[in-house]
Image 1 (cartoon, rainbow, N blue to C red):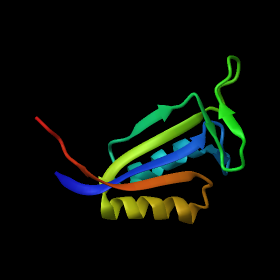
Image 2: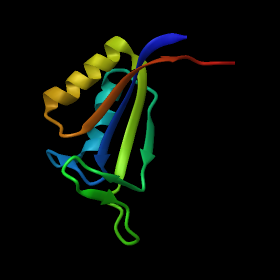
Image 3: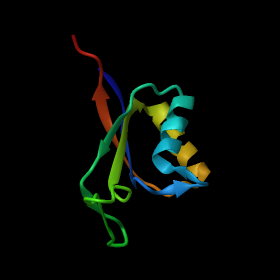
Amino acid sequence: MEKGYEIIFITPENRRHHNRRVCDLITDMARKRGITRMTKRVDREGLGAGGHLHSAHFFELADQPVEIMFVVDTATGDRLIEDVRQAGIHVFCIRKEVEYGELG
């Protein structure tokens, strides 16, 4: 098993940065760092820092929360987070230490 980070970025589906969706920007940044594995989860609803409820509605899905999750080695994780920070992208981020590896 290897040691590294699980990094989760959480953003509303419709959040944009310089006219691009934040989830697409972060995914592109990860690819440029050589990160080939990613999991994207679409959540039903979430409460933002300001108390605003973000949710998927019957007719409108744009405000639903999205989680973009990566499991990477420590150095790559640090660089990805710094890339997002340097770009000035407004996004919630969780980083926790994990052990990971392929089994079987």
